Length: 419
Ligand SMILES: Cc1cc2nc3c(=O)[nH]c(=O)nc-3n(C[C@H](O)[C@H](O)[C@H](O)COP(=O)(O)OP(=O)(O)OC[C@H]3O[C@@H](n4cnc5c(N)ncnc54)[C@H](O)[C@@H]3O)c2cc1C
Image (cartoon, rainbow, N blue to C red; front, side, top):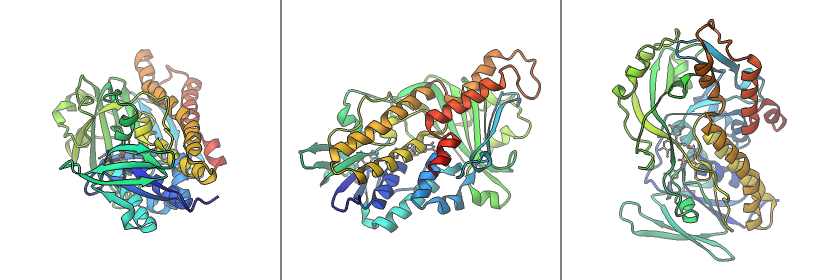
């Protein structure tokens, strides 16, 4: 049933807030997005859209635009630091999915979402420079207060039938309901995130991870435009275990990273098919960000207000699930709200469907998710393996990979069944 008469507030115009706006609009539900920053800009570096989220984005009519800018990931491989293969599997279309897995620049994705929201819902549907500070509810509606972030002056009070807090890992909506929660949890690993344009490695569409829990390198190309010129716009993450107070300082995506903070740790690495020194030294930008998450919550929905995306379930990036799970939240929410008459009941139903699976992924990612195979080899290998590690049996490796896909909802069978 189409819900022509209800309207909602989305706090946060990030990836998930904008996806939710499109999904709700598609169901005939009116929403306005309130974003804290004055201007929404294409920030960040690479992210991965797993097939289950790509399928949902295709349902929103975004697949053509995404394909024009993203790289269709062909495979994922894990290596030890000496370049020996631990596990390699096809991904996306190569693995028989009906839809691709996409590696994309966060900013490119963000701008596609913004363009579609503005085209479909109207330019005024996204209000930037509106920083959410507080909310109150009656039994008929919810009212949110927004201020100008710079001056602190109240800007507006907006009343609607429901409110979604999609305001990221440091969500103020979440804080409203969990005032004593404090800062995100730091895993002990610092991530230096960079992008470098250089010659392609492997087939130019592969994603790899190498190393172990204390020292890891992840890289994958993210821009089709670069590939069309015979190059690769490579997103990379150098990960090392160090003490840090960045998490307490709430995790700033724009904190600058320095080469000399991590380059030395990789000096003896040789994967054979990638010049790691050139990858680091020719970076266009390097930022550092602590690997942080938040504990699973017992409850997301509070009468007419609920949480979504990182605000609901910030997780470690192991397994590339962060944004994908947020996309699933958005489509699930819209689907449920469109078929229920009672809003409070709909928000409860959304929580019932999405809270438990995402909580399980948060916990699985704390055990490094599918990447645990790298640590297993690091601990077990006695140096006798050839170019392919045989110290862990293939059955075990296959089992870990499939179990994680099932846990996160992107095993091929489930995705293709709902395509
Ligand atoms: C600037 C930035 C860069 C990022 N770069 C990367 C990256 O390179 N790689 C990666 O994997 N992930 C990155 N992320 C995180 C990634 O986008 C999220 O993990 C994921 O996409 C979940 O999306 P989300 O919409 O829940 O959160 P986000 O994408 O973080 O969006 C939250 C939005 O809410 C807004 N907001 C926050 N507080 C308020 C408030 N009080 N009132 C109104 N609006 C508010 C924020 O400005 C932001 O636009 C980045 C996030 C940000 C904000």
